[in-house]
Length: 435
Ligand code: ATP
Ligand code: MG
Image (cartoon, rainbow, N blue to C red; front, side, top):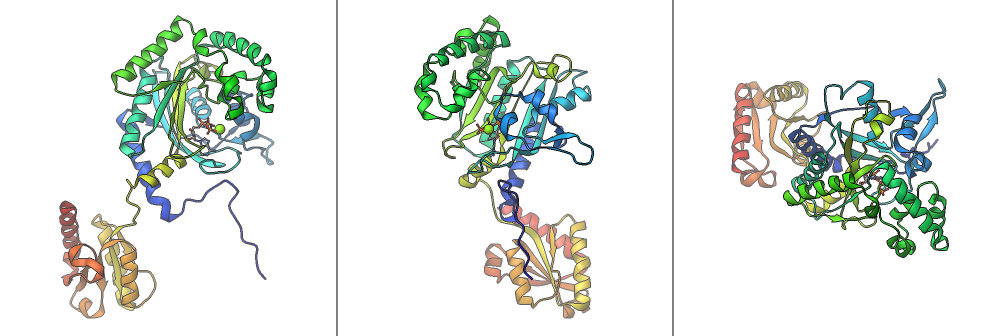
């Protein structure tokens, strides 16, 4: 009987070992980088009540209209949704646990998010984001901090060039006046609109500005810009941000049509875009969402944040060759079976006690095939626990890399068991200093 093979859900990727080094490298750089700006880790559940996202993201957004994985829990009838983004859950947790009670908070998260979109390069149904939020800060200094820290990250990662676009969406009343003018304008150009835009005309006309349909480029270019509706406060905030960016040597362009997909943004919005990824070139988006905390039942706390897509950044990293993709370990422990296998097993543990990375040869195999595996493991050294040496309380130590160990034909010497860990630590420290 042949069984049907099982496959992953469409648009949801496995991370296989061959690609793992670039993810591990990125995750480690990110953890150091957020810490260097004083952001603390927060982890919220993958599942939240559907209502959270409807309230937090807004009903007339792509995400809530058509991208959420929502279902009813058969066991208790609750309506749940796999998180499509981090902000709503982060704010929910902050309100629920009074996080901003003692003052503003800088927090960050990293992990999978789920959106039911059409899978293509750079667009998946499960993907990963790094998400950063500053809760309770009025800005514009913190808005600038977010942009400046991202510029630093692109440098740390060696991805580039990444260009920055910013805009100011003003406050609710300013947006309302702009919105009314937009509707009037688009109504008078109704014939030029596509189906999506017609549908959005009265629900979320701002989103028409964000269209990816080139046929709408002309009518969108002529549309009234939010810039003309900004009051003094909004303008001062936007100018303050731009002055801080200029003082930090960050180049940017003001794009008056940049609106972002989510409902809750006000004042600052920004996106980082690369030309290296084709249509899915936006690697990071963010901005200010002053009304959200109150909308989620908390005390009014002006806040801002951003998220970047890790798959898209990984794609850039793979092209940039910054990351060493080879697997490696310090030492591979080989043996001749029987009592030498049991001894090798203990030796491997002793080496790990000494702080080394050690791979034990599990199972049997000729010495030749074990040496091949040792080489493939990326180990610097092989320890061979052989019957003859073991009788004298010793093992063979073989260098696998470097001038001496090239092509696996490296120098081999006999080392007493009790000195093995020390010798290996010394040898590895020396070769690290040389490289
Ligand atoms: P897009 O316009 O590409 O759909 P978005 O505005 O929906 O992006 P955000 O909600 O701002 O994206 O998410 C932040 C980042 O997450 C994006 O800039 C992108 O890098 C990444 N991202 C968004 N959707 C996906 C997806 N389906 N697959 C992979 N990465 C994604
Ligand atoms: Mg989207």
